[in-house]
Structures are given as C-alpha cells and as structure tokens.
Length: 306
Image (cartoon, rainbow, N blue to C red):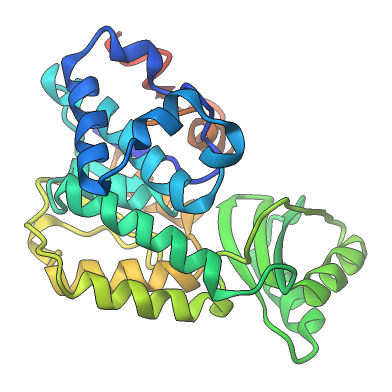
C-alpha cells in the first residue's frame, strides 16, 4: 500500500494561510523567508496580511500557494513522513516537484511568479474564460460538446477533475455556447470567475515564455514517483529527466489538467492514503468524489498524525 501527497493549485488561497504554523515551526518561518529572498520582496506580508486583491493577483497567488505547500511539506518531512508518490493540481505540480527533490524551492518560487505573469498576459482580458460542466460522467460527451460549440474558436477541456466534473476553457463566446447547450446533454454549466482561460491552447504564448525560463533551471532525480498533469502517467524517479520534467511543465500550461486520470493511476499503483499538503481541502474533496470511502486528509486538519 502507498501514500500520495497531493498539492493544491489556484483557488485555495486565503489571506493568512499558514499563519497558524508560523509560531509553531521554524521550518515554516524559514520557508516564508526563503520565498521573500527569492523574489526580492515581502511575499510573506501579502500571504499573511493581504489585501485579498493583491493575494489573488495570479503572479502573487502562484508563488504564495507554492510557499505554503512547501512549508507544510517540510513539517511532514521533519516528522519522518515521506510519500511514495506526489502530484499537484496545475500550479501544485511545482510544489510536488519541490517535495520530490526534483526542483529547488527558490527556482520554483521564481518560476511560479513568471508563470503567473505569463499566463495572465497571454490572453487580453475579456477574450477568454472558463466554465465547469457538471453532471456528465462520460468525458467524451463533454469533449464533443467542445467540438460542436467551438464554431471556429478555441474551446477545449481544461481540467478533468473528477467523474461528473470537467472544466472547459476557450474564447468567451464559445464557452457561452457550450454552457447554453449543455442542458441538452443532461449536464449543467457554470461560468467561473477567472482572469484568463487557463489550460487551453490560447495559453500557448505563456508556455513558450515558461519553456525559455525552464531551459536555465537544473533538475535533480526525484526521490519518489510523481504523476504530471499533462500525461497522468506514473513516473518512476529513474524515468524523470530534466528534459522530460520541463516538457511536462510547459505542456500543462496549455493542456488539460488530468486529475481524474491521476487519481485512477495512483489507485492502480496501490495508493490507499492521500494527504493534501497546502491551503484548504479542494483536493480532498475531489478524492472523496472519486472514491467516497477514500482515506484522504488535509495537512491543516493534522489528521495525518493519526
């Protein structure tokens, strides 16, 4: 049997996240200080004090969530609690790679800042958006909906979150058409409040910028298996090269997050315990929808001590 550590992405942030642990752990305090040093600014102040509008700016949200996740992971590591496999949802893949020892934390902080800036600037405001398609368990139905509603524009699955929940992204008009038509396929469409159409081909320019930055980053062999978003393929340490890790990070910017498939492949490899390492409990919720009786806990609940 095996334990997976999973790391959340955007949407889990709250002002003050991690503050409960600052007074309890020098490792958490040190991690916040390292993030500040890597960026040359007080990211920790934004995390702890906000304001919310500053924390939710994508270029701040991404390194902020990374910092909290890595701080929590370091607490677990110090307790001798190591995972058999790691994965992260979107941005969380960077946290997972740091936890696996494949990516230096300071490099990850700078990369996630660049990633946030590049993703936000890739598509002008008002051009693209996203929606959650709920209630359709067959992903091919949603994929065909995207084909039918695109009408020459970009419209693609952006996240296979769990059975019955797929996020789509693309041009605003195309997303609106899909939401209007999904009822014919016995589903429900819910527009998301986002600043860009993440994880679709409209974000290709952001992938190019990230690829150029990744070319200057050194990667190490992971200490454990990991599952990248873009492929959802179980990847043993010996199969993860710097070139392959970089390629997967570039791909995930403009391709769907295959989270349901990630959970499926983990279960195939005997994962029977999931620990969400980061702010909130979004991923525990997805795991529970995937498998109702799953042994899934959050770091912040401290049930991992049991």
